Length: 101
Image 1 (spheres, one colour):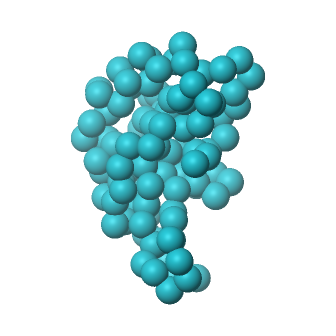
Image 2 (image 1 turned 90 degrees about the vertical axis):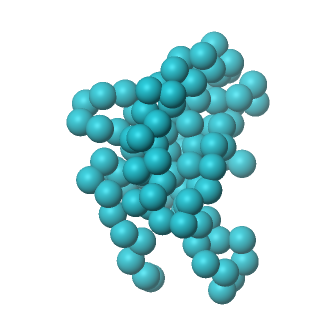
Image 3 (image 1 turned 135 degrees about the vertical axis):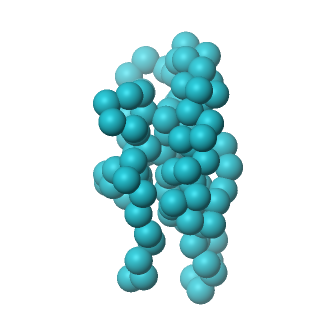
């Protein structure tokens, strides 16, 4: 398995990275994805928010974990506000698991 890189605020969980600076709010999640065998991996960025179906909200695609985490940190104020606006849309009982698509 090739090295996917690292970022100091990307915390590896069960198949995804939680992006969180120190003990601040979670900014979102990053999942490594490959469309087909042999294709390069991309890093899908999801908000710390859910849609009306209980799924994480996809935001963008980056070429590396480092780029994905850096973008989230650069846009942290916007991501925190976005998550707050969408908190009411999360169905009761939605867990904090990684993105589903």
